[in-house]
Length: 120
Image (cartoon, rainbow, N blue to C red):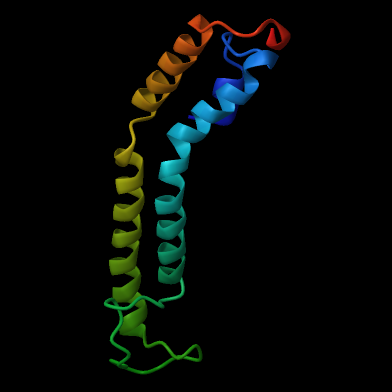
């Protein structure tokens, strides 16, 4: 669910914008810290700086970058698989349609709430 989805929804009006933003934040904010942490740890994988995946030993001849051919090939395969697994878990952790339905039901409840005349 994107911010533009709720802000462009037909039930959103200028008088309701603060409540619409609260609904968006209520649904999306709990998800953000876990995504930021995952992004940070996955970024470390791109530079082979991941505890538990690299033991620091050189298996064969070391290239100019200090990494041997064996490490380069095997670690790239292992880390590629792990990176894909991590992002797949993000995609499956929140069903986009269910998230949107949750937001839309809250927007509908908001639309049925009585607003003060100065907010309309």
